[in-house]
Image (cartoon, rainbow, N blue to C red; front, top):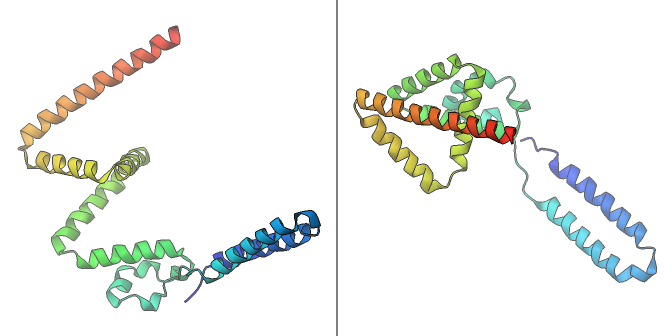
Length: 185
């Protein structure tokens, strides 16, 4: 398995720092402090040397089902960052565990996503990131509200969406008016 060169870089930086500390140590009046500093640097160097490294995933270590799902990545797999390999492996595992109905729903959502213009995709990404930064309790609350909304009859859903859009428009207009007023002052 391939190791990422992160440790080599840290090791090099710490070696350089250690050498500089030794050069500075020639000033004998600060000898005690510098010895302490060198011991600290040496300790840090030792710790970094023995930290576990993130291992790249070998293509052959994936299950045959995962390889089938990820076959489009097979040629570039060794060059992919380890984090991306792990995300892809996790996604493949989820895909494999889904039933055919779930897969169809996911493919339909993906098709919808592909049809969005980039500005709409960016807006949705921002909203999703904002949601992920919320506390877990607030996320759960929003999921529950969304679930209740989905269970309402379509005409009631439309009414609520129209009401929400109207309120949102009013807030935006009011915000714009306040901006104009502030500029005029």
